[in-house]
Every structure is written in structure tokens, then in C-alpha cells.
Image 1 (spheres, rainbow, N blue to C red):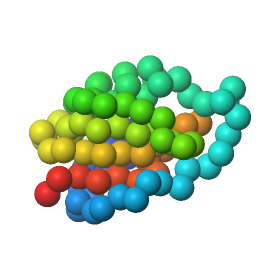
Image 2: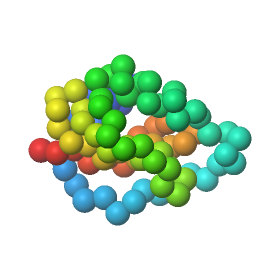
Image 3: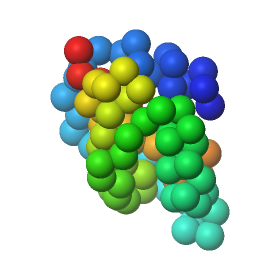
Length: 86
């Protein structure tokens, strides 16, 4: 997961219009706490965490202090779309 966050931090700021996450039964979703813990361990600060359609979405700051908006797959926790402040 560290590699995903490292690569993600290199992405430029882009306007997001939601994300197109795969649909899974809720029984297959990964725990929100698992994602929150992984992000905190990577140095992210979460200001807002929500479910947006079939995605987990967070607003906060990365370990460099830049604002982020990230959409995650609810089952695999893979990054679907990301926005990072320049």
C-alpha cells in the first residue's frame, strides 16, 4: 500500500467529478477502520471520510501537508481517483 500512496503523491491536482468504483455487496466491503488506519500509518490526516456511491472518499492532507481528495475501491482499497494540491 505504501507504493500506491507514494505514486499517488506525485499526481497533479485535477478536478474530480466523482469516481467510477466497482459495485460489490456491502458484505464484501473492507472495513472503513482498516483504510483509516492504513492512511494514518502513512502520515495522512483525514478531515472527512465518507461513502460516495460505491467508493470510500477521504478529504485531508498527505504527509507533506498537501490537501488531498481520494476515492478508494470499497473492497480492495485501491485508489480509483485522486487529487493532490500542487
